[in-house]
Image (tube, rainbow, N blue to C red):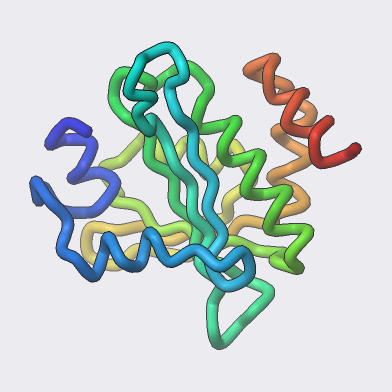
Amino acid sequence: MSPRSRYLRFFSGMRTPPDWVIDRLLDVDDHTHLAWGAIDLSGVDRPAIGVVHAFRDKEDPDCAEFSVAILDDWHGLGLGKLLTATILLDALEEGITRFHVDTLAENRSATNFTQMLGGVGKGSADMTRGFDLDVAEAIRRLRDQCDPPAIASVFAAFDG
């Protein structure tokens, strides 16, 4: 990720995340922490190109913190929507009905994406904005939009 993308995603320009951040992102258990990733199959090394996470709230197990990160070369191609549809469907199967999203106020792309999914603003704190997102509503919006067209395959995989 470029320095700007790292700043917008992690609220910091750090070149390398601290070990505790890496440990948290890798500690997926398919109940408390859900995660899905995408890899580029066209190259020999098959690098990771995007990831989504949902961290269940310990105090409110029907809610999870949501985040998405896509490498810069893959921005604007619909990968974020594909991964988001996947984690929304997985979360619903796990009994998560709401997501909480925090983003930097200046991150217009994340704000617009969250609002497109039906995210409702929950106020601001310093440089961040919080949103609540109904999982079923977000799924409905992505299903209705059907963009990118490959998103239909995501829904078919979970529907079947």
